[in-house]
Image 1 (cartoon, rainbow, N blue to C red):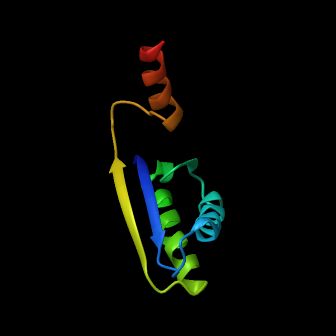
Image 2: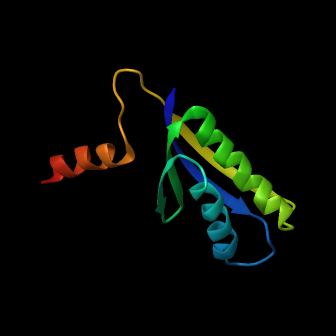
Length: 99
């Protein structure tokens, strides 16, 4: 089953910026067979359910392995069975209505 997820990872690193940790997490996500779109407060993932959630798990594991002891993530996930709709398809549908 395909799914689309919006992932916001917040590593508690005792710093103001978490850009280094998010970049590390994004590198991990890129190693999975999922479509990714980074945005200002997270990353959209699209692919098979097990791949998407495996990527999220691997992101958490990599951050823990790097010394981050606490991570809080927010995940919104959606599925549909009537058609295969990518992240780009969803964006295009809104842009078409704005035109």
